[in-house]
Length: 299
Image (tube, rainbow, N blue to C red; front, top):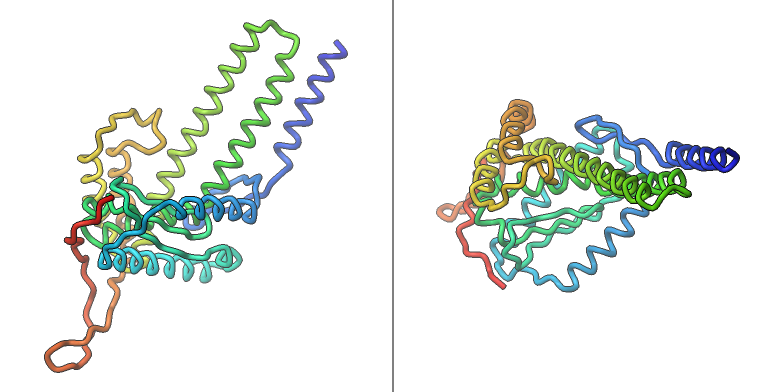
């Protein structure tokens, strides 16, 4: 009986630590509350280390036009994000971003943005984006992961799962080895299932935020529907949504169509100044989505 009381006290202490540590953060645009057990400084330190390791082996693209396009889109989205954060009283978060944009030689249809604004686009996704508007949808989505602090959130979940494993171990100590194995297996599936569910939620949140960030940067959010349709057609994975880190293609496209009316409220085509070649005068016109017709450089 005494040992049982000790176990209960130890579990209670772990729950108290779990509940009391960390901070509550509000995700921009969505207003969702997060419980974070790691600081911005800790996440940025890990992010910068991993980014440096990746770029040490990555090969940057030799395609000057596509590189310039990726950097242009990245800079416009970064500027839109910074303006939004400053205008909504979140200027303290702006200092965490040291923006950097790279196009790398990789045939995978992928891109990512590390916490702190380190953006990497793979050449393999350009045949699917096809236009700057669609590229902005992709990059806006990846930047949204960073702005929403999804990395810190996932790290916090892993820490909570570890605390839970410790508490379960205490409760099961002294029980039969079979019972312990069943308990650990049940907890493991439950924790991993929770992480998968949150990861899908993060992906949907990044879809929504990225759509609006792209619109804020002057890119047409309607490009998102055709882009994700192309992604769905090119995908060979038929993993059910419940066991996937990403929403199903059908769910993602349906959500984007639902969010488009709101995203369009932020959309204003960017006005650019272009020098004519005939009379050397300067005229102003709306930018349009540019086709990425140049072939990408392959490894």
